[in-house]
Length: 428
Image (cartoon, rainbow, N blue to C red; front, top):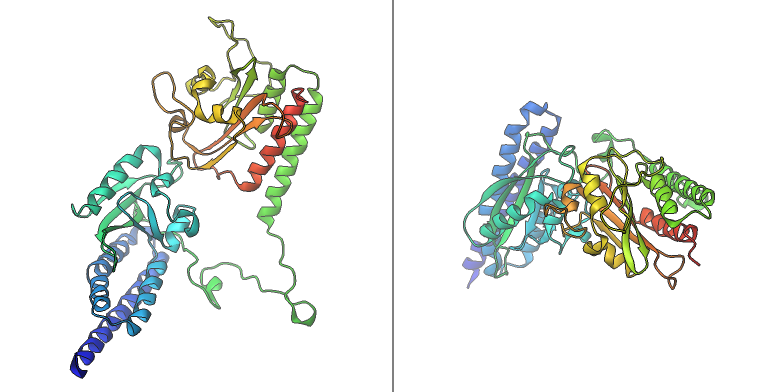
């Protein structure tokens, strides 16, 4: 290869750089579509999809061809540009493998699926979708990866009543230097509304452009930055958790000396509503697990539990009036619930968007209870006074629908509360 071949490669590289620069300008223009009325954004979204298709079918193969021919130095800048464009695209874009496992996602996708890039990478994206759409999404991704052509389908995030349906557009993509085909997935609301600003813009004036208040760093002595002002949201949540612990402690002191069933019923009443959408308690009684209390949407805790007729000597769980789903939880045998069995053995569980729909067993008709309750996050902890003490019960908390998922700080508070409840049950 002489000087002529080098000049040809450089010309091709410059041409690709010019096309990428044009592509970036068009994407920046499309970002302005967020300011349009909602009924005028659909055409801009269609144009954005065309630009993504152009990047996948022309720009990426051209870069791949240049890389294969050994143009390395100049290509490094182009690769960085492609990565920057991928991150700044205003639509949620995710790069998947044939098993729906996330390989990369952009800023808009991290916001849409409420997952940090480092946490989501290497995990199946189906865990962020509602249970009833996971199987279809896996099948379509696998078909695209096999080379059966691009396609689209409608999926929903957990909490379909609050979150819009999403149109997932799938297309095959062959990353350079890799033997297998990847799948590029683009998500957008079905109604055509443009996504929220992703916060990707940085630098001076970025917050003003997005209409957000700007917090300037204050300087202390010797020019050192002063301590940041506390986040009002975090302060409020911390105060709520302290109030919850205080209320639980007061309730347990007032029920001192009561039977374990009564202690569990009162503790569940404190946690229900203000902290969890569903509260389920099980008592480890005589070597067997027995369901004691179930509170869910529509239930009214606080009164004395009404004894229910039962064909066996084993008492049945008390479910405050709340409909058929609460009765299904109450009639369930805790021994058929893997999550409760593991907690009774001493293993707590904390999951956000649980992927296994059968973690909490099934109802009498065979439907998974987690799916029926639209559970988006859960906590299941053993009730024991210390790590070496016997487990006397299990406390399970669910959050469902569009409610914010449990956080690590809340899981820590539940761990403390579980010890207090165990002490209230008379566990030494």
